Length: 73
Image (cartoon, rainbow, N blue to C red; front, side):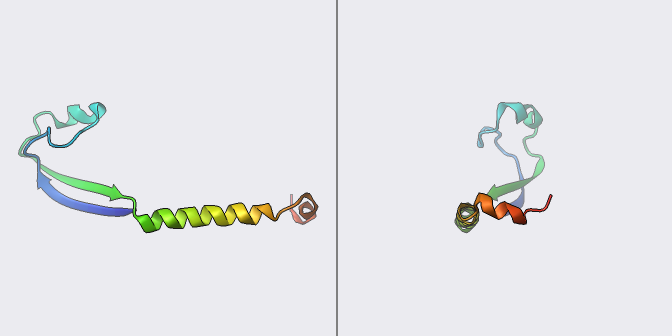
């Protein structure tokens, strides 16, 4: 994930869709300083996760019951 962070002032609380559970936090918050942090999932990150998942899946396909003699308990 890529993080984008900046400081700003809230000028219009209706500009961003805020979940109802958090809206009470913004009552009377106009013209107050805030720090905004946005996490953006990058395409490369998604591809890396997919590659790792595929690698594990393919590795485990080669595992058979006869290999269990090497498992330590």
